[in-house]
Image (cartoon, rainbow, N blue to C red):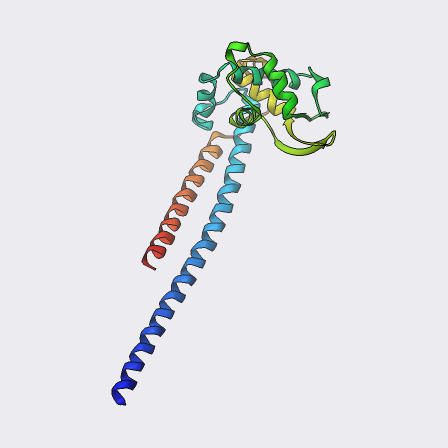
Length: 230
């Protein structure tokens, strides 16, 4: 009887140890996930701040500094094809006040155009030899690559659901000019132009993002290690 009770006690102790270990792992995982969500939210805010700083710098200087914004804009210019150029040309014309009749909606700051209409206008500029099955999804990827749109929404038009792209006029024109060598890219900066943000603030923000990325990577690794052990 004593031997039986001793074995039973051993099993109970082992079971309690296992439960305690699992509970500790769950608590530790929860703490890590909570910390991760906080850091990811902070990183998202930092990226938004960096975007605002970079855009303010671009607006005031009229150029994109590769050291500030990275090589993405430069590489995008170097890799433009006929379809990219056609999209930029159409968006540039609309930003300058042309093609108003093609728009779904037009205001002082924004214009909206359906994906179908925008695609049709782009296709008009492309010779038959360059048409290789491009479609509305392709158009969305091009707009995203150059960050031309402010957002896209779904609207019911004439009984059918259609995608509508929303453009910020000033930003769209600035991007088109920078990629195509247009007026905004080549025009000298006015004497009264606002001072661009201190480049140090952009550099500091980049450092902050790198620090957050490092912390997030370490926490993700800790989470993986705990999961592998369990």
